[in-house]
Length: 84
Image (cartoon, rainbow, N blue to C red; front, side, top):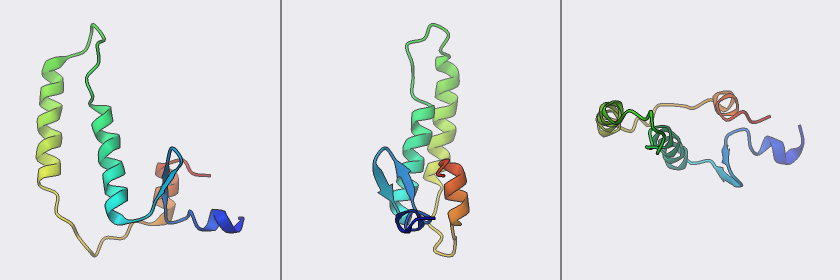
């Protein structure tokens, strides 16, 4: 591992930006999940299902509380973002 690679073990990379703080990592995950549920102009897009999913996601994010005792292992970040 090169020196600069080692610095990225506790980070997530999106586009060309490196995120390290808990807040930034949470925000990037939120953006990712929001993008999964973004509507589309496809003729087979299911608006009813979109409303259901939007409700579940809203309820889920609305009930999240910050837990200072949680640790995100670097290996999880690397695996999740396919960082090699």
